[in-house]
Length: 113
Length: 111
Image 1 (cartoon, one colour):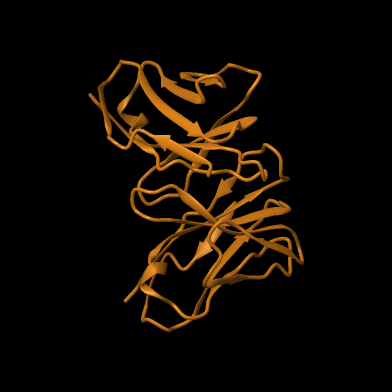
Image 2 (tube, helix red, strand yellow):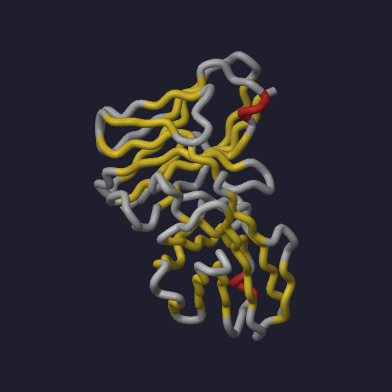
């Protein structure tokens, strides 16, 4: 199993550009999450999904959108990139909610200039 | 609001010693708490989960305690090795069932 994969690894955007961060898991997990991690800060939850077709906002959803059309994929969309969205983005999955470990992808480092 | 605090200063210890990392939380009482390890440029990796009624949990050289009175969890690595050098994240569950991550404590184990 590849686990959780994310693409791209790095990206530089100009202010106002759009992009989609891809996340795929091959563990048949129902729960998927998007976090951002700023230097010296903890991970902040952006959006999460409890299954295909179901998504909900986390702590910091503004400026982002998600979709979950399949169990495997959970893309994160940035519509109008802003410098405040410069961060490292992590996707994670878990078999169910409750108190299970989350499996994280390797991250996408995004810089908005 | 719910707040998680970990020691922001890096912890430097000698190989073979026990490393102790602290996680304090305020304004709520999580029933569960997880610890993760994060290496530079990588995603976090799950280490341990402890429930509020467990007080202490062990896994190989790792030990976690959970003191609901002090609102604190301690994470110990015994017989530390240079390979244990990483950032360790504390993550209690919030009242909505989501993890809240602390900012992490960087551990450096010198040979």
